[in-house]
Length: 407
Image (cartoon, rainbow, N blue to C red; front, top):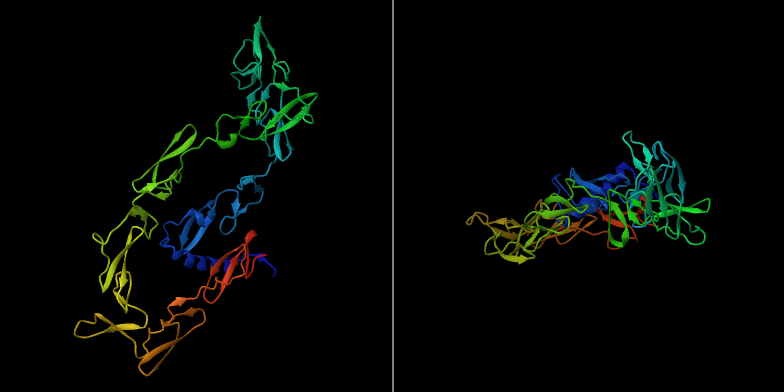
């Protein structure tokens, strides 16, 4: 089958079906909020006329933000990263940009250093005019890589440890071909017998094994940008604060988890996806009609008597109707004749011998056509996501395509 890009018309159809699926999970449809997982956790989800709509984060694209945008690519951790480019000003006023091994590399002037040549090289210091001047006295940064500094008459010199070279011990002597000294976060460059490591953004040090200022180390030595508190950092259910470069949440009562995205013990999600205290039949009996209160997963509900239905057993089950003048119509009696609602307007009713039966329209089933048949049970979506429609289904496939099957 030929796959094709999803159109706006089909997108609306798919999302309409998707909203039916989500509604079975008690997600809200009031235009206020819906879970970020609907948007692959890389977008903001909102309800538009009961349809979930995704506003994707920069770098992500697709109906559910499952693709990388143009000029972005998948990183090793599955996230979408910007492609390496040499945009104007990428290396400031003191460097020349090039792309090496997919990384943007800045060849800095002799007195500057850093990912974008915005720092002073070892042996130099920032001056008032924002330029870099040669050190005339020893500082902690004069000699790189553990070199020992001495000063004499306004001149500084460095005694370099083994494996380093240069006036200020800023270069390594290993050959890139023989023994690459750079970590996995840097590209090795041979420069006249000496070696320099061009670090990825966020990394620093002669071997790119340190975090650049403004970045913090994490698991496995990876450096990530120091976090800031955003309105969504704590899932709108807590107070955010930055501790050692990491955003930390103090959750509101009833919420738990690193980003307050879960319910605390003794709480559950309600129909509006908010965490509310668990209920019990002794304090919150919802049955207003003939039925028995039951407790399950912290919520209460009604097990209705035969013929009754509704959250509080306040209405009649399909195939039953209100009857009984003496008791104000409080009894739900079995339909023996065809009534307008007997087949829930989803089939043709026939009455024979005091029994009303329904011939259901395609896509519906049940004695009174009350059930929308799940067309995803025998779908051919394979690795794709199946969305049940009425007497049909559609497959959401990788790459933003759709159809009855996924390749």
